[in-house]
Image (cartoon, rainbow, N blue to C red; front, side):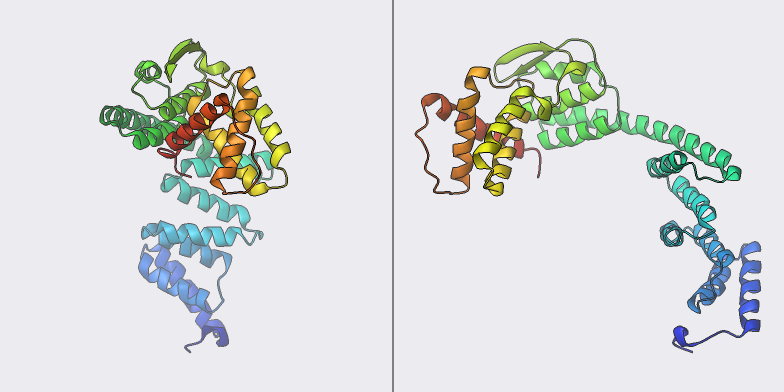
Length: 324
């Protein structure tokens, strides 16, 4: 009897376990019901009703993690009971506050238009309730993150500032005036200012804002900013470098990181057109030096040497906050 794979339950025993298990479930004796249903499943006698009963027991006993895992295993079967399991799975996600995951799954189902008619309305209601719940949680979280961000600015904790800005951006929180004013503050880390600009752009801020970086000032409209990897000068530099080092993927990857980090730190400021080739020479030389390659190098002029120092500084500033 120890090896359930070699034992078949007598029909009467199976029927008795099933009746007792489902009756215990109806009587809300969930622990007892779970034991009997598990016994049936252990002997490969788990029907659709047995599995549903087990999930209900797990949920009532507060074991949502196992209920979720079992539901996922049943969904993977893609059998005739798929949408019954799916409905229960959505209920578990809702009760465990996994609103975004629930909404993502339903959006896929809505797109494929395969949901049975009788479930269309309850699924739509679950989607709308999840959206409302998530919105409330996001607003509460955003307020908390805003307060933490203010404190992190006061403490000059740059890494914490960056992480909190990422949370606020992902929550689609509305930037406050106090956040925007930080772009003018010369004491704010340039990487933090870039994160702020990214948030303002995604939030669709259309007003003009002042930004101060590396002793340079400008006025920009965040909503009209170009993404770093779409900047004209960035694309040109990367194309030129790809031609130079296409035979060395490792070098190209390193150089690509150096270029992106420089542009990230200095954003929205970019090299002037007459400095582009000096920048390319500088980052190419620096990449070779970091990899200790014996590639013959032309002697850099003073402009390229200056660019190389700037690229080094920006690389250090980037890595001091953003872990890769």
